[in-house]
Image (cartoon, rainbow, N blue to C red):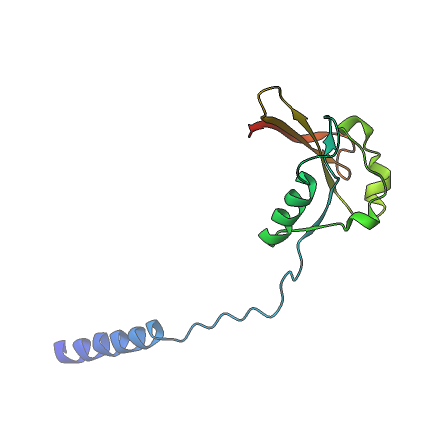
Length: 138
C-alpha cells in the first residue's frame, strides 16, 4: 500500500514538473508607431536684435528625439503666442494637439539668459498651465 501511494505521489510530481516547464510565449503584434502630438512655439525673444539661439527649435528636437512626442511642424502652427495667456486652445485642439509649449528668453546684463516656459493644456482643461519653470543659463 505504501509503495502504491509513493508511486501516485511520484506520478503527480512528474506531471507537476512538466507543467512548470511549459513554454510561455508573449506575442506583441501592435503598438504605437509615433509620439504624442504637441505644439512647440518659437520662444519669444525679449532682447535687442535677433535671438542668439532658437530655443523653441531645440526643445522641439529634444521632444521628437525622445520618441514620446511628435512636435507639429512650424509651418502648420495655427498661432505663435508669446505667453500662456495668448494661447487659443480651440485652434490647437482642432489640429489634434492636446498641449502647447510657449516660452520666453530674456537677456540679463551679466551676459546670462533667463529662459522660461509654460506647458499649456488645449484639450482636457483648455488654457490651464500644466507645468512652468524658468532657468538661468549662460
